[in-house]
Figure 1 (cartoon, one colour):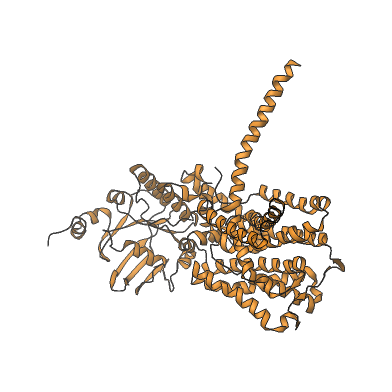
Figure 2 (cartoon, one colour; figure 1 turned 180 degrees about the horizontal axis):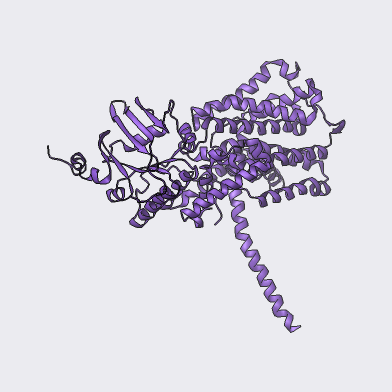
Length: 358
Length: 264
């Protein structure tokens, strides 16, 4: 019997590696249009990474947190300042350190989770969203005293080689995201992930088994913020190509929350599916508006429809499929597989019947 | 009672001294003392609301008694929390099932191996050889427990989908996985049918007999209690009204009164 929740086996990880090789080799050979990289693939992978962070704290550890964009802002501005002030670190060094800085904020804003839970914790974690963005806005040092409010991100240079074309940036992201996803999968299927889920499902029992609530919750918040921080830095440097606190507002936090829930709480592939859906759906809706109705529907109405559909989907998924699209995907795979094999058998049988006639 | 057992009943391993617990004005436990000897099966019985579960919660650190101490393995435990007691070698099950509902049976039992896991999250993320070795050891031990409890066929099922009797078994398995020296079982047989109860008794005695785990259990079914326990302590209104072997307790006047009611 296949369990309803997601656990990852070696096979899944091999599958994932295959997928990423596809991402690194096949996609660049076939997709040449810049639009695909700059508007779809790059933001998709960045936001999927942030969603993995949200999954760790919300899907796995069961702590209702809403402040992913705040940690992303921390990561993005940390990366900007590190490249500016400590150029010796290099891009990847800065990326890791900015993740760690975001993780420090994660620990700070994760501490309320020891005392409050549920919706109250959500309100408490909102503080991270507003505090970090406010802090960056308030103190000019973070923006290097730039008066315009929008700073252009530095070019990504690795070992003296500039990575400025969309394809080059995409390759960097695939590399970082692959490694971080693999690490997340390892944690999720190992003892770390079991501790998270134990705290999520029954904290008193977890404590009686020797799982420290303090350590587990704070750890989850820190790792989650690390992922969000790295995602934020990548998001700013490759997608936005600029740094402004406004880009990391509460709307982005909600977007990541939706990706997390629609993708499927407590799943890592769900983060990718959810991010893809939330990013691509508006694109699809727009093209339907333009091509089917030939612009008869106003663009503002289309964006409102988009909100309505997201809201509806959230409710539907919460009620009928809390494990989200990742579970749907799993069900589809399970239903298709026996049909495919039976189809194979039929083909084999028919070919066997035909053969003697020849 | 098991004769000729491999693990002879020894010195007190757990001592409860003068524990008093009250919730506001309600006194749940008043000046209660008793001890548990190493390798014995000790039952706590009493009518509803006698304070049995509260007693276990005090020992385990979920409730903080206003007065009294708990000594474990010869030492008074200065600060009792579930986590500290688990680390000292005391594990438990819960009256109303406290399983990790969305995790599989195997994963639930693996969480019980937490105290035998010494790798941190970074090592787990990088899947170092030492993590793999530890994971394998823990998995082997969990599989052993699963086959001991005869639940191999459901080991990948999420526990939330299992019937009550099986969930009780899984919870016992999770407590066993800790390899603790003392297990507190809070009504391990509640809501079970005769066969399931017989199975559960068999497992409890087998664990006690083969590994020598000290068992402290709360149970309502008097027949079961008298059959499997070495000594019984009877609580009523938060006080000890009887303590001794099943036969002694059975003939105790106060106990009979408490159970059958008495005319005043």
